[in-house]
Image (cartoon, rainbow, N blue to C red):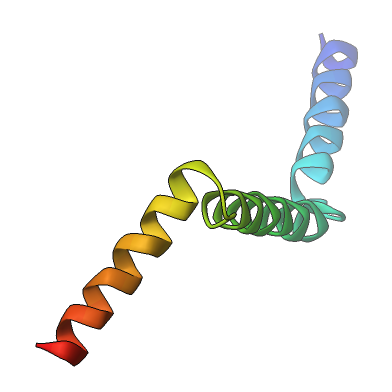
Length: 71
């Protein structure tokens, strides 16, 4: 029984060492943040392209600003 208990203790120590080893986790977090930024920039650039939905938003914004200045 002592042999099995020793094996169990050794395995648990290795598991704990794997859990406490966080090498690379910060890198993965930064990659995730960079991916979100790239996606947001892509969505914004697509939305404000001079066609479709983006063109409509820009024209309505220009109309709104001209009404403020002219009114």
